[in-house]
Structures are given as C-alpha cells and as structure tokens.
Amino acid sequence: MKKLLIAVIMTGSLATFAQDRKMKMEEFTPEQRTELQVKKMTLELDLNDKQQKDLKKLLTEQSKKHEEAKAKREAAKKDGTKPTNDERFAMKSKMMDEQIAFKSEMKKILNEKQMTKWEEKRENRMEKMQNKRKEMHHKRQ
Image: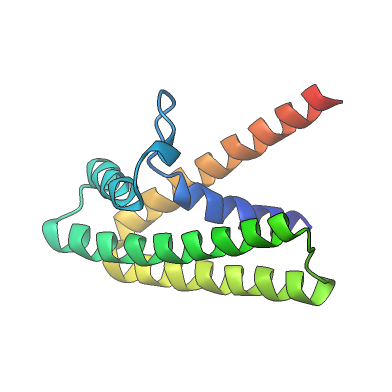
C-alpha cells in the first residue's frame, strides 16, 4: 500500500512540478504548465537548449497521458462506477510502468549530476506532499 501511495504521489508530483504557492497550476493550459516546468527545471538543473527541447517533448507527452487518465477517472466517478480489484491493479501497474519509462527517458536527457539533483528534488517534493497529507488527515479526525 505504501508503494502504491508513493507511485500516486510521484505521478502527481510531476504534474505539479512547477506549481507556485501563490497560484494554482490548474489556471494554466497544459502547454503553459509544460513551459513553466521546463523553465523551472532549466533554472534548477542548468539545462542546455537540446535538453530543454527534449524535456519539453517528454513533459508534453506525459501531460497528454495525464489528462486522458484524469478524464477517464472523472467519467467513471460521474457514472458512479468503481473499478474492480483487477482494474485497479491494471491501472496502478500501468502507472508504474509509465513512471519507469519516464525515469528512463529522463536519464537519456540529463547527465549524471543533473539526474542526481532531479531525483533529490523529487524525493523532497514527495516527502512534503506526504507530510501535507498526514497533516490534512489529522485535521479531519
């Protein structure tokens, strides 16, 4: 269950990578969000032009997949249908496969030093998100 939560958080963290506390990313188009993500990563990781171009392509593809999955979840929620255990397993397995593929592509784009820094930042974001979820859970009880 813990691994599943981490996988969900990783996917969500990538979608909100460029999120600024003062504004919600949902207010931007997918293209604008991708552009902001690339710029932020360029500043953090000192990306060259080719890396920026490759990263933008990768994030655009990921954003499309994320939007499709979100639309499917919302449609199912609207219909009131819940996935079976096998369907949930398949969705989670597919999500983890996509995360593995994303990380593999990131390794192709970034050099070793950049990859290490990116992974550290991702770990920090995941920890913050987990802490926020814990705080919200304690407030509800």
